[in-house]
Length: 195
Ligand code: UDP
Image (tube, rainbow, N blue to C red; front, side):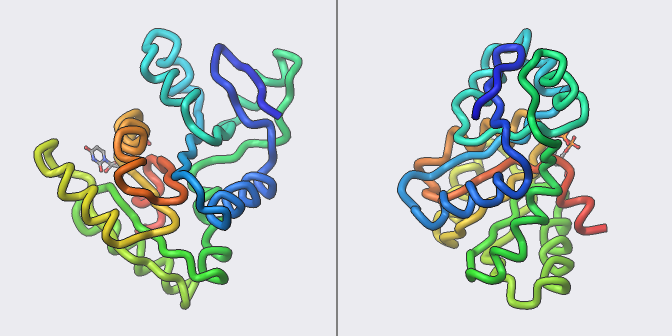
């Protein structure tokens, strides 16, 4: 069920159902899908920036990322089950990625961080198939090169940590070109996983 909050459509499903939905996106593998984890700061900015709101409403799955969003949905009379944050969702997808051999690509954060995050994930999920990593400090002129590298690596899951809304813009702009089954923005998650 989709819930409307301040003109943003949010999927009213819990973590487990969200993971299931993403798995089905990958298994079906029809069109590349995008996931936005919507936090209160983003939704606030989206009230005055139409393009931010469009990025949310054009995504295939939108999760309530933060207690403030869950609370506001409840107050509006359209409750959502629970908070589904970017990092939690990313970490919940890892065991499945390992089990099914899904390729994972990590894009973003300072040079070296994505590689460190990859190494830490591999320590926990030994068979995890990380097919690529790239930092997030490339100029617009190098975007095409990065996009080509991602497309060539053929991941099933692309995690983009470029900050909001750049990560959402990047995914929307290059989704078709990259042909990754599922892409999602994860904010500061790579820094957290890298430790
Ligand atoms: N980041 C990046 N390139 C940039 C700006 C930011 O890769 O041009 C990375 C930054 O290093 C961090 C992540 O994006 O790992 C999220 O940044 P921030 O915490 O500012 O964004 P938010 O979590 O608010 O979306």
